[in-house]
Length: 204
Ligand code: ZN
Image (cartoon, rainbow, N blue to C red):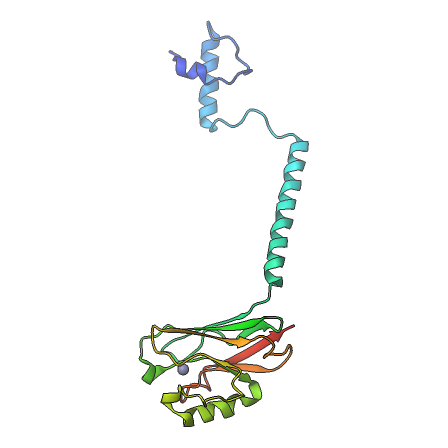
């Protein structure tokens, strides 16, 4: 039975077989094979103290991650971001923003393919009590006005009307939405406001 140099070199320093000659050669080879079988695990197991330190470090890391999540949640949301498709629906029923926002962005993406004349979408934000009346007046205003009455004070914010593949943005000035007030978003295209409508919750 031969033992080549490579196998001798693989014996860790301070191992149990310092000598490499005579009868021990066979024992050395057996030891190398055993190491290969078990994937050459590290020689020194973790002491209880080391494990405790690891556990403490893991706990601290978890706390740090929680802390970051807390910060993200605490940051006020100042964007109303919606997608609408050819199925005549927005992707959300409720959006939450903060009354502390300096301004609130409206971001609309039309994920469909139909043109604006057939499946136009916009985002209009009003007090919930005004939504139906504004939608009705919007239809009267007609396509040229983007189905919104011009200069209507009840409209707190609105994007332009867009078709498939387009996007639009607009903004609502800070303070226009009061914490705890009841506000709605909807699409003012004729026939859309019943389905394409949701709540705007205004947090402090
Ligand atoms: Zn629409």
